[in-house]
Amino acid sequence: MRLKDCHNIADFRRLAQQRLPKPIFDYIDGGADDELTLRRNVEAYDGCDLVPNVLSGVAQPDLSTTVLGRKIAMPLFCSPTAMQRLFHWQGERAVSKAAEKFGTYFGISTIGTVSLEEIGETVSTPKLFQFYVHKDPGLNRALLARAKEAGFDAVAVTVDTAAGGNRERDLRSGFTTPLQMSPSLAWQFATHPYWTASYLTHEKFDLPNLSGHIAQGSDVAMNVQDYINNMLDDAMDWKAAEQIAKDWGGEFAIKGLMSAEDAKRAADIGSTAVIVSNHGGRQLDGSRAPFDQLAEICDAVADRIDVICDGGIRRGSHVLKALSVGAKACSGGRLYLYALAGAGQAGVERALGRLRDEIARDMKLMGMASVDDLSRANIRWR
Image (cartoon, rainbow, N blue to C red; front, side):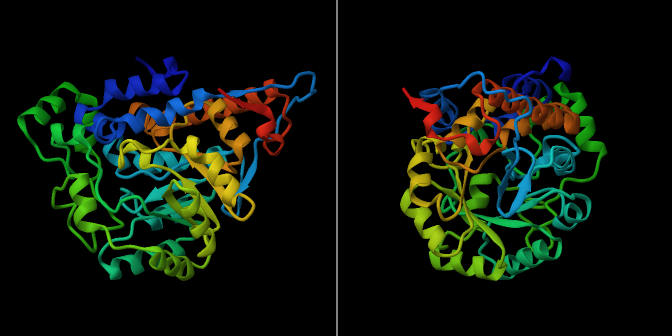
């Protein structure tokens, strides 16, 4: 399969599966336990129908929106994801440049493989720092200070990692970072020569935002579940989140909440946005899909703060459904990770371009001149 044959996210997924060693593809693709929530995240959009208006004379719909204090050119952005240089040697550099080209937010994870400082220096469009709160308070202070110094526009603190999800695909494959060689992994390296050559001939895998403080993940191999259980602060509470918001002093989101009550508390402590997310179905299996919870959360807080729908986005029509319910924007990880793994920056640009074109075309077919025109009047639930 070639990049020019990829016309939707399902195509990019097949390309990534072809290019990546199986343990690495499964890390991107998999979820927790029986992966019920992973599937529901996408399937939830099928339960909602769009109702178009015709003869509206819309020639060039306005896709722009303002979220987390910044205007972006389309209502979809690249959600922060970890360890991107493991999937393609360009990693966050490719994704950030693609996001810049499309005038939208780029999110980088604490567990990213490019430094906050480099992204701050090289990316001109809005930047979101996903903050994983660690048990080491010195590391936490340093991360916030570095993000502020690097000129990041917003911080999103991830709150759905009180324990590591049971990611059985990773347990079966023995996936760790850094990768630990085994006979099965050696076979995967041998049967995926392009990825192997790129991985071995480019800069050494590293987690530069963490490696000066902790060795786990960069020099000491650890699986994701153990990293969450051993390194992240499982005692974090609302008081701690409020303090982080005050220390940051700017646009601040809580990422990973799924209930209206939690959304209200987030607004009460000074959050300027909530990112409705279940960690891509990788934490609590059996939990609701973000889109299924969106109306309840928008009814609770959308008049006070921005609501962002994260998870399961595979089509432009999914974005329009979420905006119709009340979200200000949508975000996603797999939608660009498959493309990154398959073809680097060119792949991410093609994926974002396809989604932007779908959003624009569907807006015209809906008879909507602006994303602000979307409302629950133009959707029906099955």
